[in-house]
Figure 1 (cartoon, rainbow, N blue to C red):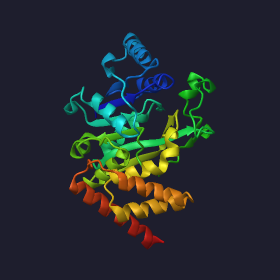
Figure 2: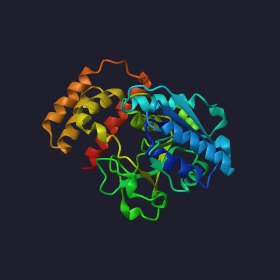
Figure 3: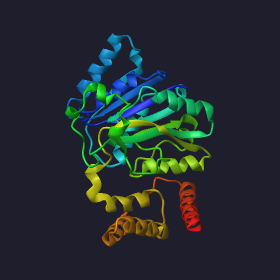
Figure 4: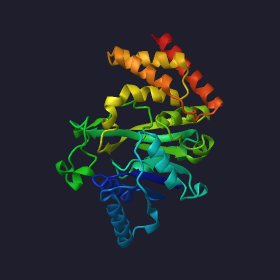
Length: 310
């Protein structure tokens, strides 16, 4: 199968080179990688362009990597990264590929990562989304580790798993945003990714809607050099309300989900902030009526199953 990898990147001078090196060293090489430089003001563009030149000189297939440089635009959690991803997607003909990947620029992959992902798609025709697990350096769960703490060999060494820990933002069964991959058939059926906060949960629910499975290979892990969304922790409750709106929840579902989150975090104020944010959302939803109905039924069914088990 042939992979199309799109990597959105904004001011990633500290991370982009180890990421690209890890892709260059993959045992599975049937892929094309488009790096979308989203108006970086640091050395991201220079680093990527120099990397592509070095790949050409080393004799590796030069067409495997290319860069698209965009003008800078305001960052928004979720929405902006999808729009940047889509810009890269538009430069290629999807008919030439079997799997579409959205990878983050701060991920380092083990050499066999694409090989293992490809095996799942080859053997399981119902696999719609596949990934490994995301790990972060121990002790750096709230900020980005200093690259000076690593040698190049250490960054690419995957025998040192005891120095890294699972980034516990979701279940180990969830295909995480930094390492998404989609069977092209599913990607087209769900009309691509939705440029809103919550896109990386919407895709999982639409995967189920179209009769495909999500698969996470729990022995396969990647290194995440920068913990997810640590810049937005102070806005968590507000963003949660926006997320509940974006995935199509109605008032009862949003209230129950908000209550569960506030109880988990032992914060009554979180409930009111989340619901206020949910009720203040005025944008037209990007989901169809059919998709909203499916997601609401899915959420109710999941709640009832948990009640029956307890």
